[in-house]
Image (cartoon, rainbow, N blue to C red; front, side, top):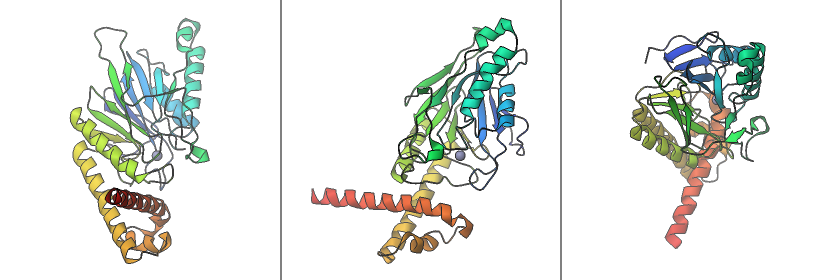
Length: 312
Ligand SMILES: [Zn+2]
């Protein structure tokens, strides 16, 4: 995999010959350099667009153009997949779909009929716990373990297979996607580079998040995955080691929080926060407070389970 280049939002970066990254122009505290949209595929198979990002017309136009046919025309998108429904990931899906349908019509009658079919929007519907800005209904809900297939019209060209892995935790409707031929994991927001995934209850859930990390570790070793492509930040090498490190970091934080709670059993979240996150920039504390709540709930769930099993 080539060395990462500087962030640019005006042109796609080819990470492999069949994997393009186009970063949306929405940098920020929560989005890092911006949302990474990915295109998987090639001119022969068409492309799967992963996380179109916010409804930014210029970004979506660039994404449409980057997914090109052999003759350079844009809009060769067969499916649009959202890893989850947060506002920096899924609102671009519908306008991108419309662009594909319109583009086909605009580009001439001969191919127009074939292109007029808009690519379906795939993913999981947002749960009842999602915030209003994260409401999302895909055209079709994917199944855990389902393989999204791109096949080449030309029998001599290779196809591409993206396996769906259900990974609730950051969001109740979060999925990751594993590109089987190349051993790549598209991690959405479950695993990030350069920032920490926020777990925001009740749609976010720490127990589910940690379990999903275990699921990803199993998948990565079974499918020989070496690289993780996050929705924010650079490519992460040594996938399995990165997941192990991430889980250890979370458990370390949870142990620290449990210790703070034990010392101040009647304390409030606001009293625990500066103690549990004393190593973190105070500007992050309002966001960290959501993850703190998720840890506290997880600690209490584990305590309840332990009490129940000892009295059973
Ligand atoms: Zn995000």
